[in-house]
Structures are given as C-alpha cells and as structure tokens.
Length: 342
Image 1 (cartoon, one colour):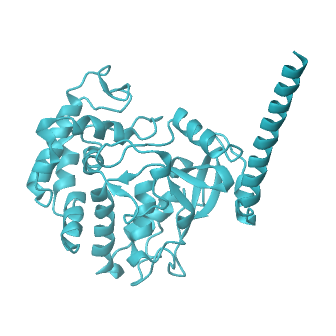
Image 2 (cartoon, helix red, strand yellow):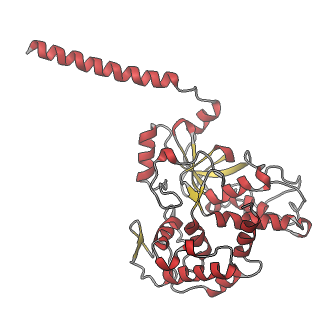
Image 3 (cartoon, rainbow, N blue to C red):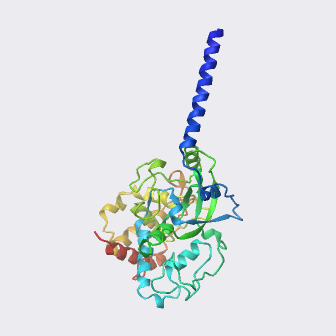
C-alpha cells in the first residue's frame, strides 16, 4: 500500500509539474504585451447610465460575426460617392454625419465638412459635430475587451466596415469612440469564447447559415474580410417597415430575423434579381408582410418571440415608399453594386 501511495504521489507531482511547465512554456513563448495591450486590459467598465467610452482604431477591432449584409454597406458607400460629386452643395455630408453619430456626437454641423476630397481619417479643419464625444451614448457601438487586450466589436460591424471601405480604403487607422460593455481580458481563450457564447455576444454562423468556430471568425472588419449575408441586407431594408428594434433589443437581433426569412421558400433570394429595384422592393414587401402577420408570442428563431424582435402590427407603406424612391436607400445600394467590377 505504501508503495502504491508513493507511486500515486509521484505521478501527481509529475502531473502538476508538467502542467506548470506547459503553462510557463506557453507564457514564455507568447510575445510580451505592448503598452497599448496593457492599457486595454486595464480598461474599467462603466454602467448603463454612465458607460465607459474608449477611443480605438478601426484596425484594432476584431469581429464577433463572420458576415454582414453587403447591400447595407453598399447603400452608405453609394450615398457617400454620390454626394462627393457635388459635395459643396451638401450641407451635412452623410459620411461625416455618420461619424458624428457613431462617436455619440449627434449630427455634423452644417457646412463644416463639405470639402471635396476630405476623408473620414483626414477631415476638413473646420469639421465639427453638434455635441461632445459620448453625449449620446445610445448611438454608440460596443466592444468587449478580450485576452491580451483584444478589442472585440459586438455592435457596429456595418457602420465601421463602411468607414473602413469608404474613401478608397484610406481609413483603416481612423480613430473612433466606442462603449466598453465588458472586460473579459483575465480569461484564457477557451473561457473567453465560452463566456461570449453564454452572453450572446458572438454570432457563429456564416453568410450561408453554416456554423463556424470562433477561430474561423475574420481577423478584421471590412468587406474584404467579412462575408455577405443577403438575408441580413433584406432585414435591414425592412426596418421600420415590418419591424422596429425594441428599446432593449437582443444582440444580433437582425440575424434572428434573417434566419427566419431564409427558411421561407417564397423568399428565395437566389431566384430574385437584386439588381432590379422593382424585384428587390417586391421581396422587401413580402418579408415585411410576413413579419407583421406574426402574433407577438410566435417564435421566430433561436427562441426569440416576434415581440422580442420588434415585429410591427402593420406594414409601414410610407417608409417603404421612401426606401424605394429615386433617392432612397435601395437605389443607392443597387447603383453601387452595379458600379463594382464583375
């Protein structure tokens, strides 16, 4: 018995020693933390009433979803490009208005940014927003601080990917302000992703609705890195027509709607000419009609009810008309898509 106990003790000691050696070896081979990483890991988290805001570069942001709706981004890029052609006549250029909003500063002040050739990363000297940074935190995007100070974007993939691809791709180091919702930097990689899954802060399905692992997430925002989910674009265009996000909306709300719409044979987007405005408008109307036909307690996707996802009682025809008119979002998106090399 004594020999057995001694052998067991030796095995346990060896096991602990090996584990400690492996841990120390991993630490030894990991590159040292930079001052920036250390500062990010030390970032405090605020409250809903007083959120902690943080300035980051676009190229620091790591996606927590593998795809976006390209047509949503194309709408913005198309509008930015159209305005640039007569920028002196545009009192509040959309791209600078979007930057002010993303930074929690409201709108851009009229006639402070309408200068030809100005980029988001190099704005005109007189560029001003209506309010100070963070004054409107509800408009700001959110991040989680992860292992080694990684900055994981949990809201704002479309907005920041638009900034990334605007101005000929010259904004990759643009500094923006975001809200810090959580700091999980003390966790190892496996525990971090388990926590992100548990708190619904990561979407692990690609643009074809196929499951992926966290390791398969893109390493950067922008359309060259993120895939396209056309149903996510469809949901964007039905906003305020068939649904309106509730005040305290669930994370990835639009993807739940997209999952649901994808399963409808009548809304098979592979059979729709999305370069034809009338055809696209027709499928938007069909999607909105399906949304408003739901009862509040009907389950849409992922256990989420129609009421949880903001289904409206009836289709908002006025908003639909504005969307599909000559200067509506749909026109900008289609025109931009048509301008791309095939």
